[in-house]
Length: 496
Image (cartoon, rainbow, N blue to C red; front, side, top):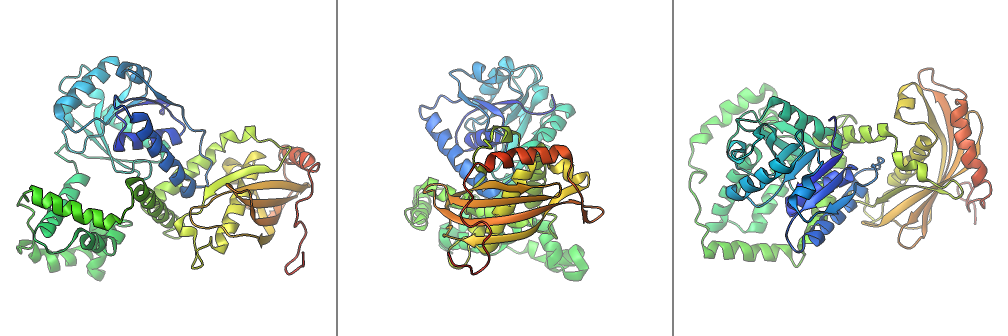
């Protein structure tokens, strides 16, 4: 088994639903078992949010969405699955029982991951007949956007299982980190628990409100942590002398009685009510689903910014996104065969995300060019100019562009683009793109491009191969039967 062809998710709550969405959007069929009477609705809402987020996250050609099936029994769900993800409530007795059932019904070579936030895999695998294939796969919410998975093996987990789990995460856009020793709560939740405990004391002692505490995080070190971890951030804080100087300078403060990390706050009714009341005030009437969408939009913006970091090579989670997109481009958009060349090709669908909006509240100018460039790229893949073709040394370069702005694309607006081929010869490709509001059908912008086939190494125009030209001409002949798009051949300032 080299990848995940079919996944099974046992439990479809916040985390289970996130796993389901992650698998589905990677083109993997998912069978689900969750006895909750509203499991289908809950999972459906999570998937809807995930699809909205992915539309903003990337223009790379996602594979056709996997098939989602709700099963009436656990045995039915895990039958034939390559990867089985358990995400039931955090009770050791329940998880042991469910994992034993999974183990008995699953295919012998299936991987079994647990979404536990802190239980030891050695304890979880106690009652399994094949404990060597059980591991903790601890993700972070939302699973469909945050890529990290902590992979933790128990005493009986095999090295082959750990390697297999790590290898299967990259193709679905996730990063597995192997935690060398099993400890309660692993690494991420250990860090979060320390911050959470201190935060509850600050609220308990009326030092600040929950909103003030959140503001302290999101306006300061939270921004740093989004792109650099703790140690690399503090290395910079040490100046030119680096980490050793930082430790020498700030090490003594570790002995100062600043924190209450070793004291357990009493979560009595009064504190629960205080935190709950302040949290309600902070939410200002926004529903959980609305907050999830805001969170997702913000995360997409951060990931896209990190994708362009480090001189365009990508940084941190952005580098992972960039690599994931490269793998999607390499697959070449396998769904393109269904396009109908007898009408303008509908090639790109997306939403206007927060990072795309300017001070006027509209999509900023260069994003129009980006969408039209993505449209050209989608056309090129359709005629055979894919990533492998480019890496072999030839491509099409855009040498002339004219964009008209006809309407306004605003935050959250669903948009799509079409392409009509106007002309093809051995070196040139003449195309006309139109950007539409997907809901109203209003044309928001057009772009006319001339592309030139080049030898990238020689740096000069050369004839395209016959098979590329033939594919482009076949579409062009069909498009010649269409009316010429309004705006073809216009120059800047020309009256209508």
